Length: 272
Image (cartoon, rainbow, N blue to C red; front, side, top):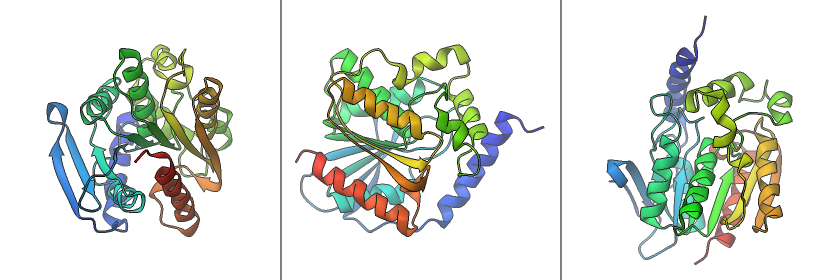
């Protein structure tokens, strides 16, 4: 019988294998590993000399996978194409470090670096949202933009797309359930931890929310964009047709076309 821990071990091994085969991203003026708050590992990407706005990037991986290397290509492409400095965060992972550890790491980096934007895909989107909500509630400075790609916003996994798209589209509902269990072991605590079920969506950063047609997390990402708009937060939102979860990592023509649309949005939205 496969246990959740066995699945996490297998998924981490698969993530390392994929990392080794990914196409390398573009060369930049400098890429430097640095230490963040409490010694947290960070990686700073600079596309050229001179000052540019800073974007903090939080990688996806279901709260249990991913590191500075798995999303290196994405960060390089954002830095070069959007003319931004990018600071990638190697936040603590579950199940060794369950909620709220990853959120606390994201908050600490945003508080220290004071970026113009924060971005995240999948679980990284969750952390970006949760960190912005925490900073707003404590009265700290917020990024001007939150950029979210296939974000996880509802740990209850109640969106219809979890069932509709939860088999045969890359990210399975069974795997999602293991991710959530690893991150928030207590089922009774998952709703309160979920950004989608927050009481207040006002005064959050302007948002770019991009979901994918064949993503189990599609509905909760779409719902988050609607909640922001109802609260008066400026939102640029679209669901990319024909794509699956995690397309931000892919190098096929359809995924790269969608990535180019995202990069154009970021160039437009991040204040200079």
